[in-house]
Amino acid sequence: MYSILPNEALNPNEPISGTLLKLGFESFHQICQWVWYLPYGRTQDSCNYMSVIEEQKGTCSTKHALLKALADELNIDVELTMGIYGMTEANTPGVGKVLKQYRQDFIPEAHCYLTYQNQRVDLTRLMKPSCEPIKVFFIEKNILPDEIQTAKPSFHYQFIQNRFGLDKAPLIWAIREQCIQALSV
Image (cartoon, rainbow, N blue to C red):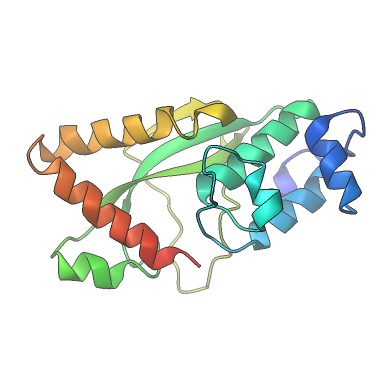
């Protein structure tokens, strides 16, 4: 998945690289693989993408924000992209029970990933062969690593309000939160 990204050696003069070098990593590709294999789960400080290193887990937001910030340190030209897709059991195994309980075919979910030369690179989780890849997004937008806790939630909630209306948006958001809980470690 990450092999299409440029690979660079970590830079001991940069803060993220320096931290990762102390842990025994040497290259961007090594970090990409490590992040990809980390469990999915919210960190205690979801605004701090460095918490992925400390807690050895992360969400699509924190994992990809960390990778984007590291790529910036290494002058690797990738974007941190946020897209909204229809989350189903087929493309996000583990949310089916919640969706069924509320009789929802899908819930709009904001997902973060890297974009390189118009190709999506999603290092959130390892895909099982039976899992459908996320191919269709309602909307996509590039953000900065420090915007994962500001731009992403407001953009996502605004999309839900536009799609379902002001009255139903809180319920859809609550169902979405239950779906995320079902995925967490």
